Amino acid sequence: VVEAYSLEGPKITVHDGYYYLTVAVGGTAGPPTSHMAVSSRSRTPWGPWEHSPYNPIIHTESRDEPWWSKGHASLIDSPNGQWWMVYHAYAGGFHSLGRQTLLEPIEWTSDGWFRAAGGREGLDQHDRQRYEGETNVVQQGVSFRDTFAGPELGLNWQCEGVEPSARFRSGNHELVAEAASEEAKASPLLYMAGHERYSAEVEIIVEGPAEGRLLLYYNDAAYLGMGVNERGVRHFRSFKGYGTMPNDQRRAFLRLVNDKHIVSFFYSFDGFEWHRYDKVVDVSGFHHNTFGGFQSLRIGLDAIGKGRVIFRNFSYNVIKS
Image (cartoon, rainbow, N blue to C red):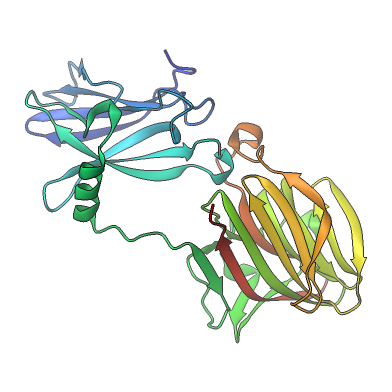
């Protein structure tokens, strides 16, 4: 039983005289147990097909598991003969981080089927260490800093629908953005957060009647953050603006802290003395099941109004538990 049938994404793998058809079932979002991958095999591409006795190949059985909505598996083999499946899933309780890519070893049985190595219970610690050693995995970094020293933005950055260079120019330790009107809905420069607890910080300088922003962005109808303008620093959400903390320097340091969906906002006018803005936001609902689009809640830099905005020394920092 699945929450939605939604048969989709068929993939064919040829192995030892069989055609293996791996298909997603159950929809790629929804409840934690909604998604899965199943497999069938045939001697020809046209059938007849027999279903795997190990179906579902991958599936979240309970919301107590660390990964939700596991599904859409693809099979790959490595040069050393090890087979793997690549699939996507949500971190449990954190749809806001978006669908993430997982890699899991599979094994071929004596009767010619494949299944997850270790069965439905997964791998024990010894097996995990063995497979990790074979893949030569590069561990994900726990922090990121961009001083915008060179002319090319790193692949960490993205925009929706356009190249970042359409609005943002990097070089000489500055990121410069021409302001766009809010009505234009031009994409911010986006950085994809990958952790449940993190902070992001940047220095912002504005020229003319522009506002430079550090924000959390799901789409152009669902976002929130802080902005620096000629009057000072303010907090905003997609549906409302809040009070301005007055300052005429046209320069401020902004920091947002996302602590397991509870977001706090901080600002400083000199980079040393920090103040906490008096609004705190719960962003647990900023995800596909609420807004559609299969996006994640990303960190953004943006410039609105008229004039231009300069950003310096962006940092993303993981908050350790």
